[in-house]
Length: 154
Image (cartoon, rainbow, N blue to C red; front, side, top):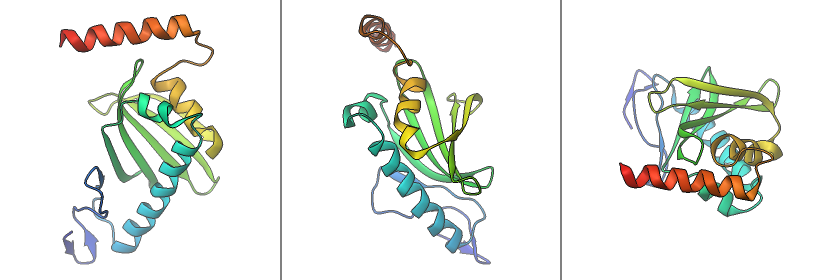
């Protein structure tokens, strides 16, 4: 971590090699606060899933801490059956509610869902990334088969 005039340039603030913090031009207190909030966000996402298999079905390959629109944000790189790219989970501290954004791999906004309670995070993310809400087991299996065929063609 490099500090220049009490500003964060780049760095990591974690012991886990799979979780990084990427913050530009923030002071150390802001970074620590962001890390604490996004650690809680990650725990709430995992805890609100019906099982841990749901979280792992999203194919999360990267977890990043950042700010998005001045809100502490957990970024997850996912490879689900219906969305591949980034999921941003931001805490709107004024409302004490979350906002979810889906971005493609070029970081272009594809979908946005706002005013989400903590206990809804897992099911909403799952419906956006892996299994659409109300999806039958038969239809879901077709989605997985199509996704697997695409992965083998690449």
